[in-house]
Image (cartoon, rainbow, N blue to C red; front, side, top):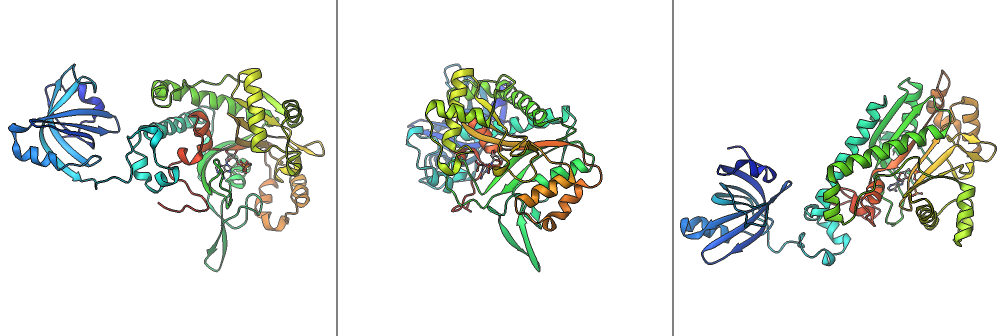
Length: 439
Ligand code: ATP
């Protein structure tokens, strides 16, 4: 017999079916047993009248919640049953994996009494069973599919760049170094150089969704040492504006798709209505952002006086929300002093770069890149980078490289914002931080 998933049971009334899932609830009464089985598509009630089969009744009595079971039985329409007005009359039961009792924690217990996040991460295999998590990762799947759809409709190709590198791709800080035969290698901090190689390689428009590594020892609610980066790069841009306008339309497309597929579940599980953002998103120059901070009385620390810190991102985000209704805002014209050497300059001290702040959190850095060989070499030197170390990269710009730009966006940060989650550890499949390499 083929397995039927619980969500499809309504089309099998009066048939005997095989279903598989986790024992959600067992109510073992004097004459009758009620089991609720859960799979990724829903839950169903299974009923067993004990006198029908005493051996089967005895087996059911030994079951612990969250055990993995295969059940056969007849599907009956029963409007009085809360779970979809259906029940299954139990015929046979196979225990695929009996759950130990007690569980490390109760994944379907009172939401306000869940154990601490760190403990839940120790038991992530149980934590992932929670309704919120199943939905969160289904939303992630739909969103990534929508991003790919958008890119493919717009003439982008997907690349998979290497994560082992012979030299750093960003600054020397935050770099994981590892032994590589007789020499050293580094884990990629971003696919930046290789996305740009595709511009020199004539692909024109590329994207990559892949892992990046940052040896960042901080313990914030938005940093990880390994994360999934959503990256794109596009050729023949006139300025960074082309990149921003492509990104905002893509985000609007992805939000719309997630709302169409999961809007009502998001409302039921997370308790809010997903808003599809209007485009264009508001844009502020860094100078204007600082004027707003002055106006609202937000004080940047002296070392961040030309920059934004997380509090400033929140303050600007809030101001834009109140004044325009937008959850998203681009900050443009960042000083070259706090940007990487490959960002194109705008005038002497500024760059053609931007950050996207969403829900008060930085989710993207992007820019038009410097594609003129001599200027790029000069900018690398200005940042104290020896061109010899990155000559293989600089060579991309010697034989016909179009003007181009792109961005990197953290997948889990986007999910934090989309699903209003306070901590990135909740929105990544498995968190990696300075103190966490397991499970
Ligand atoms: P932050 O200032 O928050 O440390 P960053 O400026 O170092 O970020 P970029 O190098 O610009 O980040 O990376 C682009 C995007 O990648 C960020 O906007 C963010 O969405 C994501 N990102 C960067 N670092 C991390 C991290 N450690 N963990 C998770 N996501 C990250």
